[in-house]
Length: 115
Image 1 (cartoon, helix red, strand yellow):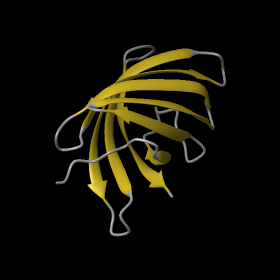
Image 2 (image 1 turned 135 degrees about the vertical axis):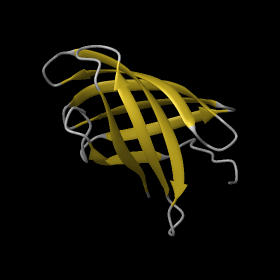
Image 3 (image 1 turned 180 degrees about the vertical axis):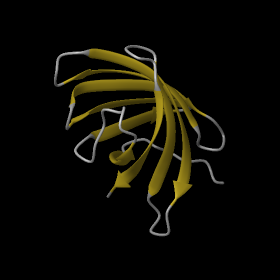
Image 4 (image 1 turned 45 degrees about the vertical axis):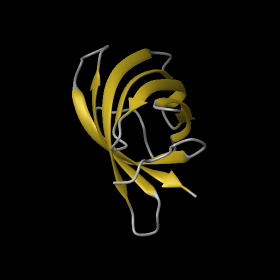
C-alpha cells in the first residue's frame, strides 16, 4: 500500500458498536506532520474530542483519544485504525477501540473520508 497522508482530511463515522459514542453526526478533522497524527472531532453525542496518534508505513494508526460527551462526562480510550482505499479513492478506517475510562469495554467502528 502506498503511504497514506491524512493531513487536512475530514472523516465521518458510518458505523459503531452500541457502547461507542460517535455517530454519523460526528466529524473528525485530521492533521498529520510526518508520522504524527492529531485530530479534533465533535457532533452527535460528542461535544468536544481530540486524538493523537502515530501512523506507520502501512497507514495504520495507533492512537489515544479523550472527549467530553453531551452528558458532561470526560472519556478516554485507545484505538487502532486500519485503512482501506475505496474505489472512489476515499479512505475508510476500520477501527478497534477500547475505553480506558468508565466500563473499559471495547468495540469496533468505521469512519470514512468526506470529500
